[in-house]
Length: 444
Image (cartoon, rainbow, N blue to C red; front, side, top):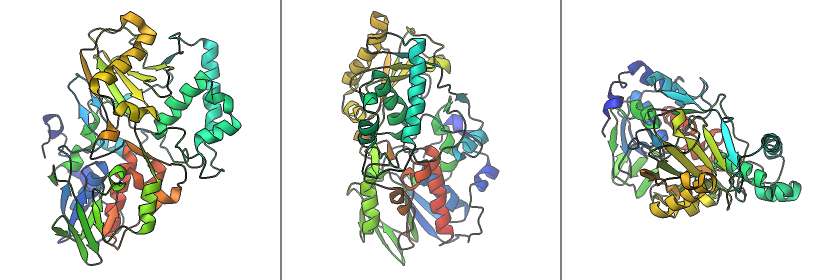
């Protein structure tokens, strides 16, 4: 793999890397061989911890880059994050924040209240409407964060029964999409009313990494044997060892995205236990779609951090991040959520650009010029991912996530944000799962 110049000077932090190893009493792994499938944050965390304990580790990555759903593009002059864009809850207990602090990576603290919202006609909300929006958000939090209900009901089903007016109120529709569908990564028709909002969080306002999110995994990837463009098709395992596409090893860590586990791209021999496969099938894997539009000059208020636009259908480019609040680049980042995200994913770059510009012109009219540059994401169509992040789907349970944590036959270990219910859908959830898988091997 290639370490970029801007990361090279930050890799000499041996003491920090050593601290990634488990603090628990665990055996050394000298002479032990481990294959890790997937070079995302979970796979890298597992590989680094095992290597620090003396194991010979080979990381097999299907794609042509390291990082998985962390992928930064600097071509616009500021970081465009294809995947993870924020450190959520950047307290000192958050392991991703610990990585960023150790590397002295630049961060920008976001202010969710620095927001201007426009209605369906492009008119900015009045003060009274902002008060009503705040009250509605607080009320939705109270309703949605109560888990005492059936696992088979969706958030949409619940609201249709107890708060039907919210589903036809433009303010309510916008709040449900931008605050809740964005957070979970799926549509309210698919999110479990019981478990959809039952996960845990770290404290603190979310932060953006102003030099790029890809910097956080550089020390984890350093000096690992990472083999790019190496998709895995077969994993054989029994109580004596494993074989991964001809590579024999003592253990295997499977850190591929849930979307891949839902397919037959990787054949496990023997098949995964029935309860594990059923849990994989029940956990949801959603998408959030992004488009970055760079303009020659700004037509928006450059001091406003977020713009909300009420759109139809729900989830269509209704939330925009203004890059001028943390960079010198005239970039607006648009996002689509819920059931509109996979619709957007299926658009070509040209069609998506027209679709997003139409939303901007509903507010700023002819002031919206043609963009100089455009970058887009299509996570549900990416063959090595097939989605953005996991969510608790109707019909599933917390046990589905925790079941994926358990070692299989003492040789096969799962890692990834889909194995960590408390922090699913986050980079810190992925990082923690990789460390957990490594610790399980150390204790095997």
